[in-house]
Amino acid sequence: MRTLRSLTSSYGFLALALLGSAPTAPAQSPDHEAIRRIKTVDWPRAYQTQDVALLDRILADDFRVIRADGRWASKGEELDWIRHNRAAYDSLVFRITRLDVYPNGTAVVAGTGVVFGREANRSVVTEYQSTNILLKQRDGTWRAIASHTSGTRVRPGAGG
View (tube, rainbow, N blue to C red):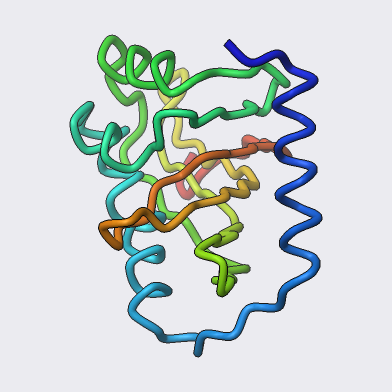
């Protein structure tokens, strides 16, 4: 099992590699569309419907997430979490503000997640910021290797 130091070093190396190469694909390439679908359709659906098989296909085996509270989790821990926790919200919309695909088969996707739900008999909206790094696999599919969530804010929803 990797240590926190080796994980941070690996992600730091990845960040340096990304800085040395600029994205070259057009904004609407098939890769962009595949990643957009993963982040705005498939990933939210996996959590909302407890679809462990779908999330398993999205996350690479060495996936790690840093949650908003600073805790780290592995792919296995994420799969176990959705297996045992039903979504406590009505819907989730992810708005992409950055989507870069690099020639080396690496992609960065970031944006704002907006979760609509109920809490204590009132409507609430929870917003958070998320950044993901995905790698293109040999079979042409994209899989997430890293995720970071922060800036979570909860506010009353419409009519709440």
